Image (cartoon, rainbow, N blue to C red; front, side, top):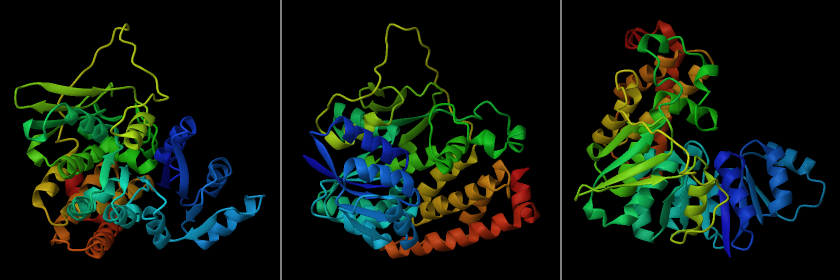
Amino acid sequence: MKALSILGCTGSIGTNTLDVVRQNLDRFRVHALAAGRNYQLLAEQIREFKPHVVVVESEEIAKQLRSILSSPSTFELLTGPAALVEIATAPEADVVMSSIVGVAGLEATYEAARAGKRIGLANKEALVSAGALVMEAVRSSGAELIPVDSEHNGAHQCLRAGKRSEATKLILTASGGPFRTTSKEALAFVTPAQALQHPTWKMGNRITIDSATLMNKGFEVIEACWLFDFAPCDVQVVVHPQSSVHAMVEYNDGSVIAQISATDMRMPIQYALTWPERAQAPVAKIDWSQTRQWEFFAPDLDRFTLLRLAYQSMEAGGTACCTLNAADEIAVEGFLAGRISFPGIAAVVEETLARVASPQAGTIGDILEVDRKSRAAARELVACGSRTSVLHSLQN
């Protein structure tokens, strides 16, 4: 039986992981749960899965959690970033599900890699911000890094069809988000409520906005380069509104292998937990007797410039991708708060990339320092809003 440490247990990936555990109690048990501020849901999870260790972000949350748990605590309750590292590297944990959003999960994921763990990776920032460091840790320790994002998980499956040296191109699909047919001019009037209406997936606010701007797909291009050792020019994005084909790999003989499944995150989560074995999953199967039509077309990089910036940042190297991620997070916050427009997200990111240097990073501390500087620069731009001439010119 495999023991799991789940980082980000109250989020979408975390709750779906626990549902996979619920369906496979003979295969998995929970060693540790880590959550942010949603202590009500965390309390329910503790009652059901009885973890040995629980981590929350602060003593205040820990106090509130204790207050709603009626029975005496049978687990160790810890707080803060160091506690995340502790449960990610614990000898008792066979698998670490890394699903904390943002750089908050970076250090724990990196240390889990150094400890040689199997990591179900749903934390984009680990590879986007610190891909070189994380992958070096994986190679040195023999850790297993299994992607959970549907596209990368699909690519992982497609690459089982042949040798990596025989694969010539990776194709990642994008739903196109809610604005795939919206004109560039109309994007300036998009509201946060509209941007949060994703046509396929139900996700957290930031990733939903990133999907609407195609920044999320840009992050996936960067991740794919690190995960599968592709050059950016060999990773292609195609818009596929039906979201049934998650990834494709082209081989040197012209064959293209596609991974196709229902849009249910429990499938890639279970794949990461059971790999290399495949097991029955609690997800719907595709009914091939039903008529269906699948579309594929190129993304419009003029309307969705963040995807272009992601390719450029990966090509630039150094810490450019760290700045890309940090600036995007601040810009998305600014958009959701009504301080900048929807096109202003890309404007903030592009200008932040121009302002912040991109040195090579030797440690996680170096990455976190660039992250700090990038956030500061992006916050300054958001604060200026429409008064900042560069933002105004870039939006028009």
